[in-house]
Image (cartoon, rainbow, N blue to C red; front, side, top):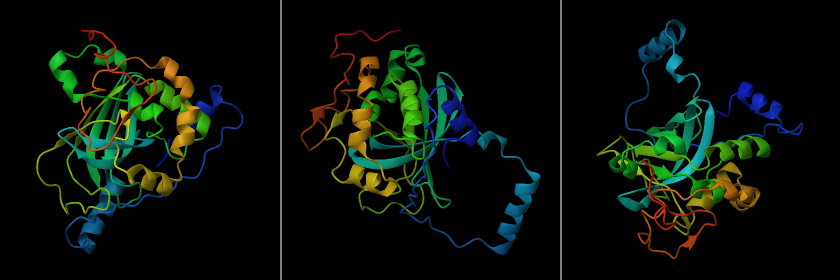
Length: 265
């Protein structure tokens, strides 16, 4: 699933140039198969009937596809690639369903809500610890929109600058060669974002890039102009020092407290 054809066309029409041509999207199948028997014939018949007689209206509109990575806030070395299928509800709020792949057999393993800086600044202080900043993901080239032409992806990332996400993973479906659980187990896990180079596990980003034919270094270079839009964000330093590897600042990614800013109320 990519940005819907109508939406992609609209982006191209709104001044992104005549060279705006959608690119092919690479498949990324899930690595975990859920426990359970194959569907019985009567189950398939019920599904066919439901498809004809019932509406799936709440699912329509989840047509913005983003791919990125999440470390778990309480266990930063548990890291997952996340395929986001999002619905932009309004200019300041989006809601996303997360999967461990982008094929028909992908497993739903979480949810993410994305809000603008404006809405984040309305949150009470106690609530903000659940919302991770996005500038590091964008400026590093980690967050991508597979299948979109470069100009349209750049416009999308520009709109997400200074935004925040609240993400819960409810199923550990595997990472970095480690097998996932066959069914969702345990408590929901609050996920965070990578805000420094070196925080992501060696090999995790490279494997995604190879699978989806992504060039993170090139995207990082192409997004250098977005640094001018970057404001200090809450939560950039929340996982500082919690990774067993050397880390390095990402230009333009600054914590509010380090910048001497008082969080807005």
